[in-house]
Amino acid sequence: MMDYKDKWEELADIKDELAARDWFMGTSGNLSIRVSSNRFLVTASGKDKRKRTSEDFLLVDENGQAAEETHLKPSAETLLHTAVYNRTSAGCILHVHTAENNVISELYGGRGEIIFKGQEIIKAFGKWEEDAELRMPIIYNHAHIPTLADEFSAHIEGNSGAVLIRNHGITVWGTSGFEAKKLLEASEFLFRYELLLNQSRSAQALNQTIAN
Ligand SMILES: CSCCC(=O)C(=O)COP(=O)(O)O
Ligand SMILES: [Zn+2]
Image 1 (cartoon, rainbow, N blue to C red):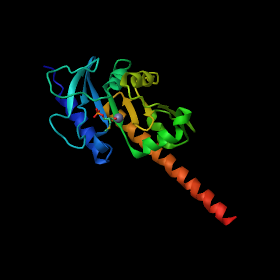
Image 2: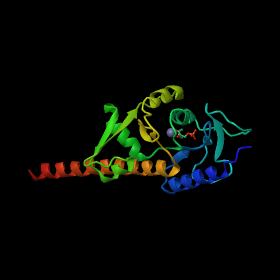
Image 3: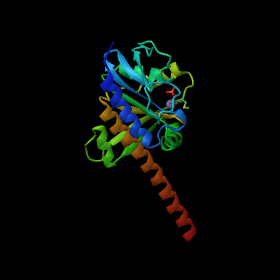
Image 4: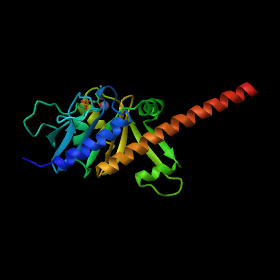
């Protein structure tokens, strides 16, 4: 029997922090943490991720199949997690649906990406150069999960990263739970920044029109 109590508690603590931000609306979202080279804990499908119970996670193998006897079903999006773990040394993957990430994904989805430039928080992604640029892919929300996983996989380029799924949510991964949460928080800050900036510019333009 594999001992993964520490990883379970680490993921449960991260889940509690994200739940406190109300980032698991309507049972949306799924999280995972690597336990070994070919095993990881993933959230059970369809559960209320705001609650902390003994059935929040289950151990799965590199194919996303339950690795221990259980009545729980792994996340419906487990193939996105296996895609990352089987290609990288990532240690943790976080997927949340927020209104901000959904609106941004729709506003910029037609371009296939959103580019952030010059915001200090981009340093969270390890980009410390002056006026750094962060490109975040936006992919189509295929209902067929294997197809979604294939398109998602094309954007897995290292042990950390983030991909927006249009009108669905964001999936972020990092070498550890700490890094994955840092990148998720930085991403959601950038989405809110972009939306506030767009709103402010629209208000300025309207005021200018009224003034003329
Ligand atoms: C009600 S959200 C639809 C499913 C989804 O996108 C999600 O993130 C949660 O699915 P899971 O199977 O991981 O509970
Ligand atoms: Zn989802």
